Length: 132
Image 1: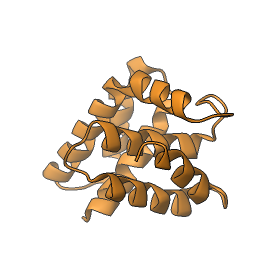
Image 2: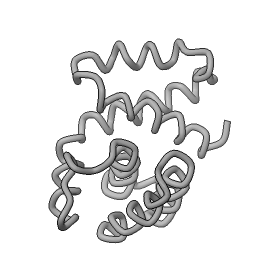
Image 3: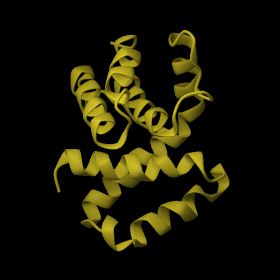
């Protein structure tokens, strides 16, 4: 599976954060990987799981960084898809040195095109420009 496909699966797993309490995320992660559509190799699943858990650990810091940089918006008002994409991208920009900032932004915009509304790609790009 390509990096983009793994990032899409990570996005889908991370999206569950909006609908489940944090203390249930380990169980949600198990449900996610038990689903037939989310099967991957052991290495791929380990990458997705590891990055997911690192994002969850930094979620409050990521949301704070978003709220500080985005005027007129806050994480409570953002669409759930856009917020999930932004959380993933902000994590990659701030905490993941293995992902260049430009790649993180480009991949976030591609996720927004695929999963978001018509305005999502420009919104995501505009927010992430404040992190670049």
